[in-house]
Length: 107
Image 1 (cartoon, rainbow, N blue to C red):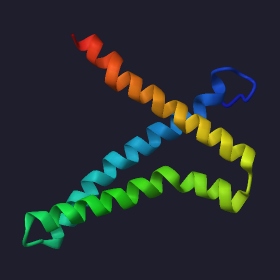
Image 2: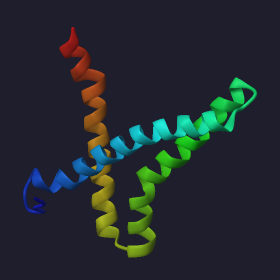
Image 3: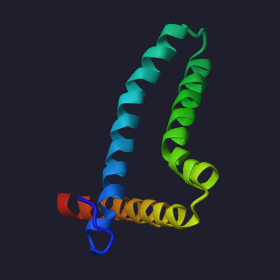
Image 4: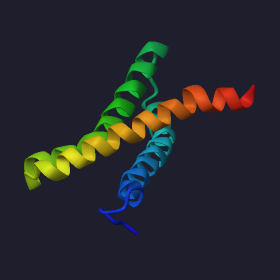
């Protein structure tokens, strides 16, 4: 499945990780809403602040845990660089797709 010498198979783990992170964030959104509803806040602003804090904490952890693992536990700069390049490339591709290609195709 993964082939470091291939021009396109080397991005397969990055693409799979991006899809997995997106799916986990979508699932956690539902969990965060349910947990925030159970907290029974008196004010809408407190409810929204609590929801934003939960989502930010999970999504930041989910997105950056791999980078911290490679940088501080494995201490492997080469893998860290590959992960950063892959993550930035996947994010650039996602932005071009959602901001340019999809709106153009819808018109």
